[in-house]
Structure formats: C-alpha cells, structure tokens
Length: 485
Image (cartoon, rainbow, N blue to C red; front, top):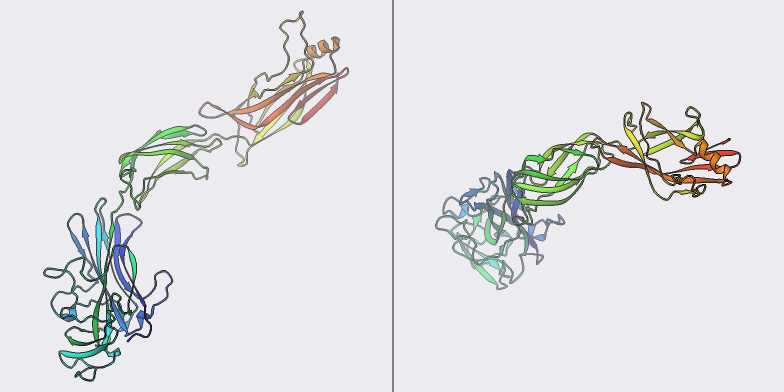
C-alpha cells in the first residue's frame, strides 16, 4: 500500500502547431512528473505503478485520426486493454506519452480525445492468506488486499472506445477539457480510492505487466480533451502604392487572402497586424491598421524623414506570416551645418556685406552634392536702424529673411549666404545719425527631397548686421566678421 498519500498524477492532451501552420502535433500524456517543476511525485514509485496514455483525433469534417504509436486494443483480450507506453528497455518510466504529427486544414476543428490509466503492482500489496495464489497469477483467480479502497474491482476492465465499447466521455471518471490537469491518487475517497477496505478477487481483472510479467491492476484515471482550429494563413497578392517617399504619409491597401478580421478572431487566431522593417533599421510608423475583410487590409504609414533609398519589407502577422516589399525613395537630411566667413562682397561693390559658406553633413557621411537648399524666415526679426522717411516711402525694415536658395557642390558646400547692410544703407543710416544700430533675423534652412517637398534641417540660425560710426559687422550662426568702413 502507499507510503505517502495525496501523490499526484498529471494528465494532459493538446496540440502543438508547427511554425509553417501546415501541420500540428497532437499528444496525450499521463505522468507522475510535475510539468511546472519537473519534480517526480511519489505516485511514480508507490505500488509501483505503470502509466498509460492513449488518444485519437476527430475532425469537424467527420474524419478520425488514430495514433499508430499508441497500441490500440484490437480484440477482447484483457492484456490488450492496458496500452502502456511509459516503458523504456523494460524499465518503468514515470511518463506515458503518445503523439502524432499530421497535416491540418484552415477552418477545420480538430478535437483530441485522450484516455489516461495507471496500473498497480499487486505484488506490492499485502497478501490475503485465505486466498490461494495470492502472490502469483497461477490461475484465473487471485486475491489481494486493498485496505484503503484504492483499487476498483470490476469484471470488465476499461476499454478504448470503438465499435461496441463505451464512448467519450467515460462515465464514472473525471473529464478534463483543459490541456493539462492534475488529479490526486492514493487518497481515500479520491478518484481511485473509496476509503473502504476490501479484498479483491481478481478474475481476469488484471493484466500482465510489460515489465517482468508481474500482475498489474488497471486503474482508469481520467479522460481529457482539447480542441485546435488552425488559423487562416495570410497571403499577399498586391500592395498599393508600391513606392513611398521618405517623410510622406500614405494610406496603403494590402490585398490578398486568409486575413483574420475582428469578427473571426479568437484567442489563438488574433486579428492580423502589419509591420514594416527596413535594412537600415529606420522605423517606419504604421497606424490605423484595419482588416477590412479576409482579402483586404488598410493602414497608414509614414517613412521617416532622413530615410535612405532602400527596399522595405511589409509583414502581415500569421502562421506563417505573409510578406511583400516596397521601395522607399530616401531623402538625406543634413544633421550638421558649419559656417565659415569667406570675405566681403567687393565683387558686387558691397564691401559692407559678409559672405558665408556652409558645409552640410550627416552621421552616415552621405553626399549632398546637387541637393538644393533654401532659407525660410523663422520670424521675430528686429531692425533698430530703420525709421520712417517720407522721402523714401518704399524703404522697409530688415526684419525677415530674403528667401535665397543654393545648390550644394561636390564637397557638400553651398553659398555664399550674404549677411549685412548694403553700402548705401550704411551711408544712409550714418547720415541720419541712427548708428550704432543693426538688424537681427532668424533663418531656418530646408532641403528639397525627391518628392519635391522641402524639409527643415539644422537649428534656427541667427543672422545679424551691425553699423557703428567707423565699422560694419556681419554675423551668421555664431560666426562674426568686423571691418573698418
């Protein structure tokens, strides 16, 4: 009899889909090993027992799938009913498991039906002296003591359901619909114990163990079941538009088959998601994903400003996922711009205007040769030299950027950017006794991308021109140049 009460046996059945979504592994298991901790229960050694597991699958299409590695009983022989698989090289193992890989079809529901058994070694129980052959199977009759009522005395051992046999669910045994459950054995009043002492007359109510031919008494532990419906496999046939410009926003339409809508989604087959990945690692924003139908998905995407020319991959989630590609037309956006004073504009007879040359670059060392840049006014300019002169009604304060544009050269340079009052302006304000004075304006630089649009780059630059009685000053983005004039 058992040395430790409340030992546990874990029974489970279920499905393990493969990564392609084309097949699944169905399995059933009866084990004295805790699946969470890996610790073996005392049930593995008491009596000692052997463990059995048997399963088959039915489909919503009306077919049945049997597991050839589980020895299904073909006849009425008591020795056929035990179908123990928890053995290895004549050594009792703490787990019996049957499994089978088989192809699946989307939309078909597969139900696995599992039977879980345990066999008690009758030689481990006390003999009853009043019975003959108490410790052997010398005849059709043998007697064994069961003081705690763990064993069931039944003239008809448990049989696998087939023609003429009992079908699922099996009456009198616990039924588990979850994929894994534990049951308590070796406890009076439990699944396998009544708590009532009894003496068993075993008249073919036992089988011969596959390990050592010892008499084993079959115990029906439980039945279990699980269902699996393969998810629809997404496939993409087209994507519109097929070309995206960096920095632009697009409403895209993905056409295909096998998409899962919210109405058809389940916990195991969720609504499809859409992601975009790039070789450069640039993050393409994806939002407002809508699985309109089994054949159409819509979404909004925004390739980032500064994206390079590359081919991105669009992925629709699933098992397996579906992919297609899209061309992203990149736009290199400068991350740095330096400025250098190049002299005064004497070539155009403006010796009071400073000439500044700029060099642009980014962290990847890209070439900006041929790219067009322009300046736009960032607002907030002031001109302390200006005053209203009725004799010059068209004269205006210098409080905003004039709006120039330039083309980058081979060395990623552009210019000159001319900053300062004209010679005539300097003379005018000095004659009207307005000096010292000056202007300050704020400049935002932009670059034009392949889509024809302009994109800001760099910080807002401060541009200044100052006049004193004897000097003029030109300033741009932290650079300063002053001369006597």
